[in-house]
Image (cartoon, rainbow over all chains, first blue to last red; front, side):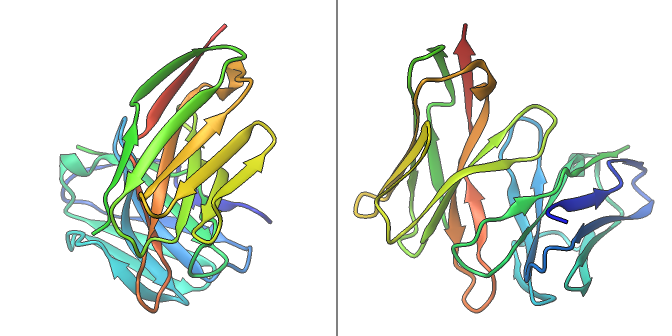
Length: 113
Length: 115
């Protein structure tokens, strides 16, 4: 398997809901990432996991809570989001830690009402 | 933190002509510079990358050059084809100091290939 997969593809949630985004890779990659991409904008780094440990948190609000249960899975737990959090959430993974290609999943398109 | 500037924001070229997109970065510690192509509604796809110990890299019609002294890197696409139309992002690595590096992206260039 040479792909990063993400579920769900689309998600609509209210501001009081709790939901989770899921990312999976079976390439044996040791690092995984969450990026947020608003329409017509570049991806923005949110979190980096290295060997299942959080190594970068780009000052993301606490209503976003990442979790890395094992080396193949990455979750993003969402709670009390705001309409401005509506975006495409992209997961990526890389084999190593530095100077390594990051492979992106197809993303979850999130709409917060 | 790292800041990546990308120009132009839109580039229209005739089919068969060459296209050049330029980026500058601010953090001299950055050592990895990938280029991604993103079609509408799709994920970013890596098209070429360059590491800081290399000045130039080529893959068929696509080439990237890196000038570490000036902190800029460029993407060159020759013999452009309609399927090259997309948004192109440059990126630079963000050193994490013990963990994996993240990426900071430029704002993107919308490349339009005119038939």
